[in-house]
Image 1: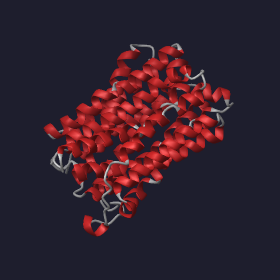
Image 2 (image 1 turned 180 degrees about the vertical axis):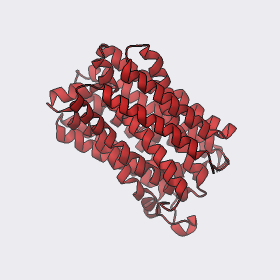
Image 3 (image 1 turned 135 degrees about the vertical axis):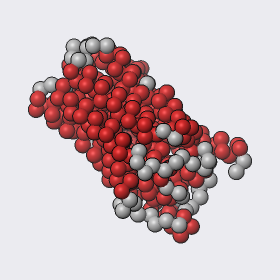
Length: 388
């Protein structure tokens, strides 16, 4: 394939990855305001994060089959269309039904696109997996950070209307759809790929990798939902709390790019996963028990570690599987288990907060999860395949 075509494919991958996150992280800075205006409890409002993540888990196993039926690239294009439509519909009404319904549609589209983008990398960038995954994970981190940092200014710019601020991200989706219409669609069949389209349930390492991803996904979405509320409850101003959450998201940018590159360069991905897990545990303990002590330090470290564990998780199926469809299968199982569990964490955390009357207990629970994540990364070191 010509270099210009490779450039187009990389840009398409980057734009698609950026579109996978703002629809979710854009809610966090506005979640308390939305809950008050719509008279919703924390448990109910957390569904705006939990339901799309649940869809991302439950529907991920369908991704390889859709790729076989319609072609990998065209299926991704359709997913971007759904994401764009789900964001745009928030413009026409600030009701609970529209807010939650659009979140479900968005989660379904992200569920299908995620595994297929991993297969896209394996298909078009063989031999450059580490470098391209670095760009891929960096792009998702950019999308997540942009949603967290820019949604409030966008809301203020658009008449201080939160539904308009959320819908503004549809413009990014439109750009993605237009670009992907120019990406050639290459159909894949089970026979030519040499692999069935089912998930690798019989592979023990697939279960371990999926378990690690589940823990880090649960932490990410619980933090994305409740970090601002925890800081604000601890006595920090709302502006300071939003800035700290923005810092967590922004610090994911360097680690999202750097850690996958280091993992391939030095073949040390599981050591890096252990470091990320231990750092996350320390930072979450500080947020739980001493949130006013050097909060910027822990926000920086948490953002770096949490994004790093996510970026490295994306790399793992690419080293375990051989073909693009097989990578999609491993990734689909990882996302199925990870996001199904991750979807519960915002709701569980909201329930624990409502029951205990403080956000300290949910963040203490997250600290324990980060410790377990660190131990699991240590077990994954045994039997690991070398980078290719």
